[in-house]
Amino acid sequence: MSFTEKYNAIRDLADKEIAELKAEILKEIQSASGIKSELEAYINAPSKHIRALIVFLCLKALQMPVTKEQIKLQAIVELVHNASLIHDDVIDDSKERRKQDSFNKKSGNHLAVIAGDYILSFALKNLADLGSIELINLFAQTLSDMCRGEILQQQSIFNIPTMEEYLNKTYYKTGSLFETAMNGALILCIEDNPKLKEFAKNFGIAFQLRDDIKNIIENRPDSDIKNGIYTAAVIYSKSPNNPFTGIEKAKILLDNYIETAKSLLNELPENQYKTAIIELLEIINNE
Image (cartoon, rainbow, N blue to C red; front, side, top):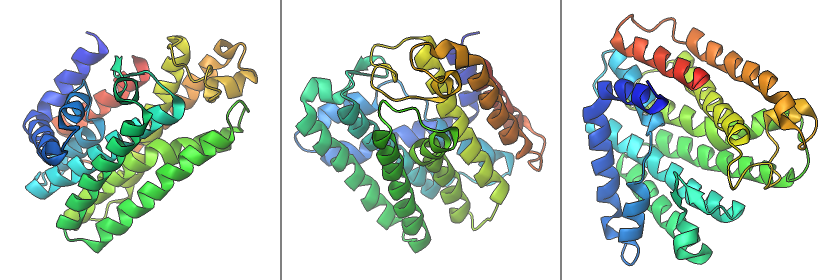
């Protein structure tokens, strides 16, 4: 089975919730006058909704209800994520996203920046509707972290960062939103579970490490190395000219984050949902 086939088999366990999530996201952009069709095409493009998936599976593993508020919260996370992707493509001058033309390639940088801000405004409105100061503070910190990560990345363009700098940037840009997706869900449940929050953080960093490794192996058109973004393999190889010498060490680093994430699930009840999360970690590590 391919990665997509394995992933879809796992996602089937939260198929109803993912469908509701997609409907919630599309409902929010109906008022985007002038660019509604462009946003619908962008948000309807193939997406794994992986942040929402791991949250839904964890809630189900704990036998907690996936309420309308939980769906709305994960829609907010997805809207923030999509807004950041549109802005990232402008910053990186990327022409492709999810194997399709990027928003900025189709509509230009000016409209892309506005579109990203527009999506973010929908997220903030819905966040206010949930009526939780704790959630508002959480997302405010997360947006700050994501911007901080982008600043760190831009400051190291065409310079090889230290591993600590790279991992910090990876947490801020990617891991923080995974962590917030889980933390926000626990806040709605009035549940404190530090291990699950740490699990989501490690999962997010592992997910980005995997993408960084694949970016080099697949030699993508808008590759990180071409854009002066040097990730784990380059750091280990100490040169952007031959990053493949650092791939194995980068894979070991990925494996360490995967194993840490697995260990943080030890207290989850043994059921099909916990099994699915572990399977998801394994395909991220091996596909």
